Length: 284
Image 1 (cartoon, helix red, strand yellow):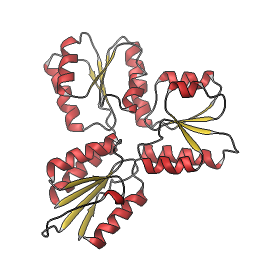
Image 2: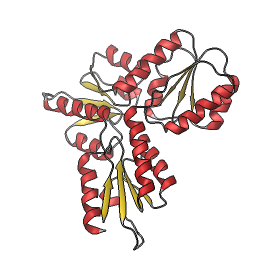
Image 3: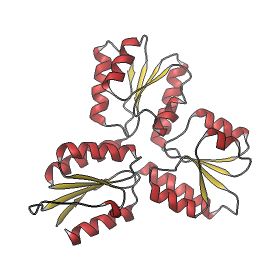
């Protein structure tokens, strides 16, 4: 079986940086507790390995407030401004592993909202990155994930606002939602804050999916960017499979299948990608 592996598959810069920071803290821990605020990345295999090494996950503000010692590592998705304030007041050590591209959005939102501009975040409601972004607004902030939500916000928006995006949002969908605002007369700032790596990964995945007989997308079910890859590939290749590890791979392919494509989300470790790739080459 011939396999096409996406060149962009696997850890992006921000994810690798965040994971490396946690392992650095483990090596120099000297017995003091280490926590991540939320899973450091959206990948269960990585989180399990860190837990084996003594890293605990803080799930909410209440848990954070209960701590009086240790190091808190801010997840790659970023957090609200309030979380930093709680850590500082608790005299806990803080290691900021927020992706620099996400950090840039925080600064834009904070600056624009201080100027009195309402903030519109185009992204997935409830996603930790989006929750973190909205937590830097000092005024009105709204989230649009669908055309319906964009219509409602646009109809009620007045004044000069600022539109930003979740870094892993579907680029084409972002453009479509922005167009809705513009048709409603919006003439405020529009900042495309989708990460270049995300956009390149989506374009490459879509291209490969049009060339192959079957497509495998590897990543965590909670990973926004991986879900977007699956969505894109599914539209271009009917036999598209979403797996987290090799154990999830149960493909029933036609005899005529000759070419399989593989891509992976930004939080998928290379060893999992290689394991799937080698298995497919040998067994199909």
